[in-house]
Amino acid sequence: MADHSLPDVPRLRLLIEVARQGSLAGAARALDVTASAVSQQISALEREAGTRLLDRSPKAVYLTGAGERLVEHARSVVQALEATRAEMDQLSEELAGRVRIGAIPSVARSMLLGVAEHLEEELPGVELAVSVIEPVESIDALLAGTLDIAVIDIYDNVPMAFPDYLHTTELLRESLVLVTSPEFEAPRPVNLKGLKRERWVMPEEPGACGQAVRFACRAEGFEPNVRWQTADLLLLIESISRGRGISVLPPLSVDRAVAPVQLFPLERPALGRRLLAVTRRTDLRRPIVRTVVQEIRDAAAALPPLESNTGSASS
Image (cartoon, rainbow, N blue to C red; front, side, top):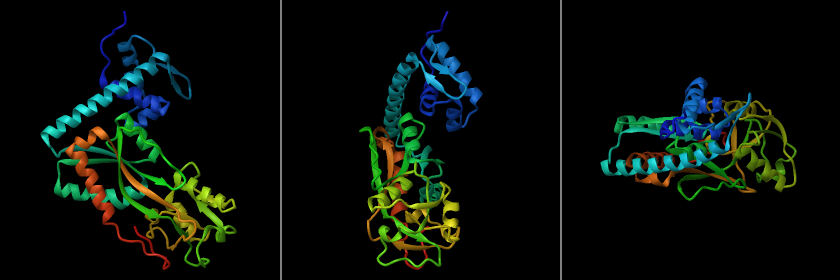
């Protein structure tokens, strides 16, 4: 006879992650556990629910009807537990524990390393757990309850919508710049139309930066001649430095320690991105989350201004 006891909450969180990732292996990677452990816990959850929750195939898993309903209820349970935790933290005002952050690479390097070092000195009870992931993934993880803060970027021409139970804090806005090799002679004024005959090095198009720059080029009447395409920022900067092409990037993504490059303000069209810290609204009542968000805001405000036209960049 099936055991119809109430489902275990950690297993519910696991089911949410399996649904989000579309595979047991993906959920295992996201939660830093083994795939066999995920499989065992899902089987235990199916015994608790008294029905099959997943249809398994060699390449993916799919929720059954019962699985979809349980995921809906599981998300409500997790949200209720997050709200309860926020209230308890608010009452205790304790500044201790782990804060899980998902961030884009440039923010992790330019801000979060310093934030972690400062908190280690000032608030040793606070521990940051940082994952470098893309904005869409970090928002999904925030909604699933596996992150507390998502630090993301939103580019012009690539909008992103947020559910009303998420709160966004703007950290800064930066204008995209032309990035070239040290020998490149940039046209004046610097505009996209004047660069249409150049070779380009670009982030991959599924990423927001790649989408935004390609959209802007197409709006100026040309398709960029992309010779190198990569999500690896280190390779991207070195390939630009060695003359493989030019690019348009946010300054925080440019690290001159990798290779020498020139930066020029892009005069037309003006392109930019906003950096945001995103949290669940219930977590705004948690002193520890508010404190970490404020630390990130302070780190953003302390960034040095961009130096351009001389081959230097903020880092």
